[in-house]
Image (cartoon, rainbow, N blue to C red; front, top):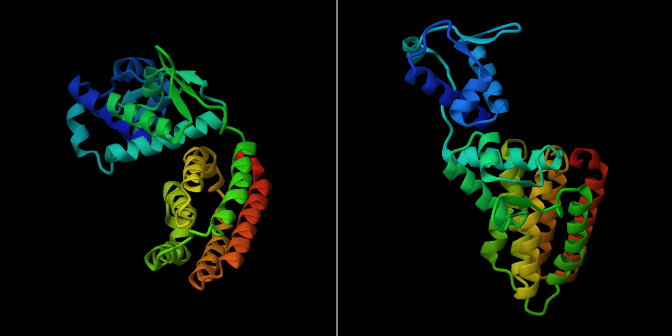
Amino acid sequence: MSLQTNTVNKILELIKEERLPEGAHLTAQKLADRLRLSRSPVNDALGILEQHGVVTRKPNRGYFLSRDFEALADTPALPRPPAADDIVTQSYFKLADDLLRGELPMQCSEAQLRARYALTLAQTQALLARVSQEGWAHRRPGYGWEFSSMMTTPDSLLQSYRLRLVLEPAALLEPTFRIEKSVLARCRAAEQHLLDGGIATDTADQLHERGVRFHESLVEASGNPFFIDTIKRVNRVRRLLSYRSMQDRSRYRQHCDQHLAILDLLERERNEDAAAALSEHLRSTLDNLARIRGILT
């Protein structure tokens, strides 16, 4: 909705700027050309404006302004423009979804992305900086951007879990493993938040970050920089597919219970039991992901 809201407000500003009268014909192509956007976000925005009574759609003719520019100030309940960070985040997930569906070319320019997702230049650059940092896009020599095919299939996510299944339990058995009580308390609080309702209300970003913080906290306690660097690299690139799996949140209560059990074992310094519990947790996640494979494709 943030992307649509951004475009809605651009159209409203254009109507006021051009002092359009009631009955003015608003064609999607002309608006797209004026706003330097693609037609898709413009059509979505016109649909929202129709719901709010700002425009009227006539079959086979398009959209017409149902009130003049001066009356727009009195229009109730029009969506407010989202914060810039919200727009970039929404664009991030839409881009990822388009990429996974095969609706976005593996190579494209900043201008194409800016038009497709109705972004400013600064927002487009922030979006590309994020995906570049996470490792699933890079700038092409001379022109444009290229997305990595490494994390665009369900098998990629499953393979990342198999790597973690080898490394993470072993990290708990490192002779240098030490975990602070404050870290245990922080991880417990995050799990309890989810059990208290966060599973349903947290965003995909928040759910992903909660899982990343839990697992990276355990690996960081190993004191082994090679374990830490490898897991952080995996976590950066697996986001592209892991957020898709969050459409099915029924498994998260089980995840929380398993995380809390692992924390209890670590607090009692039963690291071998904790490593076994972590292995079982990752295996059960692999099984769950295999069962919801249809969501990932």
